[in-house]
Length: 231
Image (cartoon, rainbow, N blue to C red; front, side, top):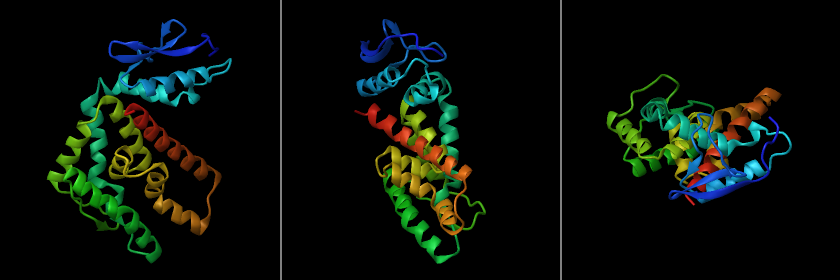
């Protein structure tokens, strides 16, 4: 799509902040005005549009896409999104440990056990740990506590949490990212322990490199989005 505007700017909008392309409000794909509670996030989205060249490249508008997802999808299907995120708690990555080799066992324990301990204290949601990949039942009270914690987030925060959870393959790692317990590199490393170990042994092919880079980008986007939203 060719660029059809000269400048993107932020304007106050009923206690919030709208993004305008020249004198027209930026809208989501569902035609809702893109209005945000955070001036910092709105300014960052305006910057995405100002950085576009003669051709608008949707791939270079990640904050816009995530905000639009929150406004068009999460707000309309909140209960479904909460349930989709919460289901990760039942089989969370950090609860399933290797039996061997010792190096991998030690890495998993060092990275994942502190996150389980943190979730226990932060959300009153202790989780069981097992060896192997056979599913185990998690305490129902813990699953309810984690679901309640997820449901307490705003729609915009939920959009970021959903992105982080799917990228990490772990609700606990994603919550640690969103809550500031982990930074981007820490969340990526924690979610990729098994893959990183295998790469150290056997090497990494181009497809794997691309996939891991995309996952890291999603984790970074979720973290940046929430940081801007909370400023």
